[in-house]
Image (cartoon, rainbow, N blue to C red; front, side):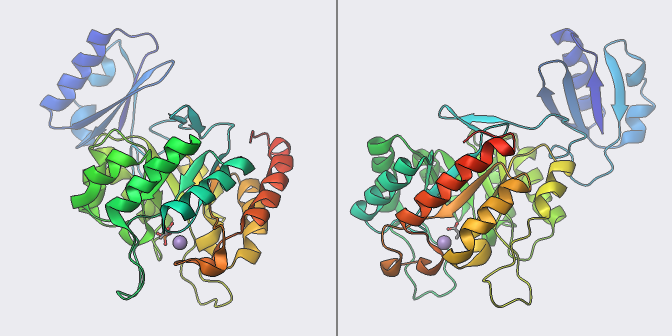
Length: 337
Ligand code: PEP
Ligand code: MN
């Protein structure tokens, strides 16, 4: 349930309600909005209703949240969540463009990609140093050396870094280099990892699991937020279906659904969502039209030579054309790029 405080209540009133809830055994999460403070309380609602809490002059109302996800839900927070990450906005009117190679392969490759995506207008550089590969014989990533290259690319271009963390043992290391921690589709239900990331003060890009329902995905976001890290960005990347012309089926219907259920920003990854660069521009435009807050796109200086996901990577020229078309589309959608 959530306890909605009256606008303009004093800090001591908020603390009194928090203490009362804690005494009754509730897990408590504070959300301080511009106009009012909302207290998320996880525990036995009947107890709270019979405690006289609602009669306090500082409390406007107590709202039960019927959904299994609480902190993630629109009922908990009515306004869209907007984050400022290194001076760049994610959510709100601004569209967040994150682009770069699937994997960090060398300093030369990464710097080239970074300069190219920056010239096209991206604000974030993506690139994996730890790669979750289906085959143990495929390129697994450069690990910490790759993270250092990402930091060098940030130094060189000013782009912010988005990179994947695969397990809880490397969370601190990856967080030292990244501006946004990516949780990959295969890790979406690694609950130890989610909890560990939840203890950081660092934005998280949480990709949808390969066969995850929207509710399972939102529950994973709840894991992160329940530990105190509220800076979660969702990313749709396609789900497994019977279709074989595409690598995954990009579920764009999840975007308006999430917007109704949750206040969290949602990005779309049309590269993994389709598996083929030919379909990336159309699905990018469709994603933004559906209400996505930005895109995560694979771009490689030379896709034919990529160590990972070349067939779905745009070359810099095609990424440039895509960005030009998105710049025309953004104002029509009431967004900025
Ligand atoms: C990636 O973005 O590099 C990646 C591995 O994606 P996913 O986890 O969605 O497969
Ligand atoms: Mn990839």
